[in-house]
Length: 128
Image 1 (cartoon, rainbow, N blue to C red):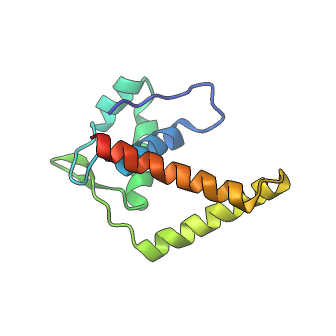
Image 2: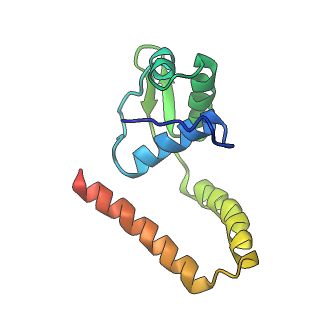
């Protein structure tokens, strides 16, 4: 898995790392049971402080994407409760959709965008 950090981004590095790991899971680049590099290895790979990687792994653990095992390190372990995830998506979508409404994005354009993104995930999964 290739992790690329944009050091010029306004988005915190630990959030970029979390998002890229989640995208890797969504596209099946990373699968249930796969081990992630150790905190030290990941920090060396992407050129960041170990505390940054540790924070990202802690967030991923709290959100139910990984488990931390003393022998295997960070392991992909998806124990996300679907109802809880839907509520979180609803909260985040409210903000995204409000921004779109302010810029006159139509319902149809939103639906097309969602379909396009889902199709990208399906395509990437088939290619693996």
